[in-house]
View 1 (tube, protein in one colour):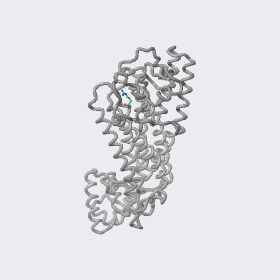
View 2: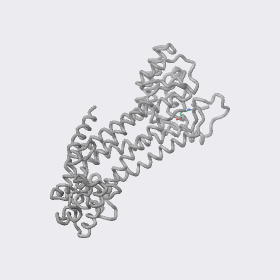
View 3: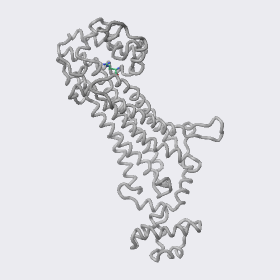
View 4: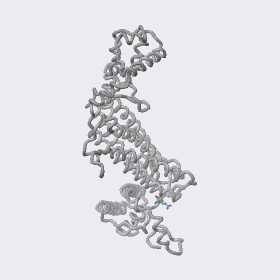
Length: 459
Ligand code: ARG
């Protein structure tokens, strides 16, 4: 029956095509670190419980360490007929120390082992990604502070709406990423739970110390139901969902950078080192990096849907379908780590074309809301003021003027309430300054938001 972990009740060998189709080693070899870590702690627990002797444990631990270094060095042969990472490590252990190597599988099934491995893997990835998001937030703050006085158009429907500070715009993304980080922290809580002791599905008959295992693996709890423990993949689904949402945020910012770098907007330039050219059109400079991040977001959504769909019809408990959870998980980790890392760098490679941005802010009646507010302060209802300002814009448009180009005489035609002080309401700087309300785009509020953000990132 070859080198399989099963087959005692089989009369003939598996067909090669089955070995190939069944094997997960091509991708689950990535779990070697978690698999060995789990086995080492399990081995120490078996000794503590008197299931193996401490000498036996020492021999096993040494051999596991050797296997670990061999894999790290690339000195370890992976072989499809050995199915998965658990089989590989167990067989290598037996090759080194004989049947003693088999003892660390007492009370353990690959069903709870794979759950432990992926839980540890999701935990490590979550911690890593959370730190990368922090870096990204620091980059946002750096760019915001460097351009703290830069006023630009804010948009709704992608139509110029009201002046805002670029720093305020960037801090909007800081907030999204702050929620992403807290979602990953939630994922971590539900992931960091020990499944060992569940064995195949019903729990083990051996006297294993689950609390010891949980403590040693720095986990927060032990699973409460062995059947749930071996069939639960919620922690992977949640991890991918959280990643999908993070990617959605990165994708929206990517979209903005792509738009801002068009000739039509012409607000930013991405440095040569972070842009690409065209093989046929010599004048082109393309924003490939944000485009790729926008594109890769789709992959992560795909990974999420793969997993949800794979799980939805599975009866309790373990089913081989679940082996299909790994590739979407690994792909998500790789894509998110790379995307967040390169995006942090990209942010610092953007220069803002202040003159163009200023011109865009001054054209298109972005101060219209403030003019309506002005009339409201003078005693009119806002609805009426809105209507009057609408009329003023119509007339200004016909004269090809902006609102501040209308003289007082022209203004008074629309309302006698308008006085000379109106002009103080019509420049973008004053619009911004009037919005120091909590959460607004006023310079003092934005200054405070920046300090608060920096404080949050320290903790
Ligand atoms: N490679 C398997 C997986 O990823 C490990 C668990 C195998 N369990 C089993 N009963 N065949 O799902």
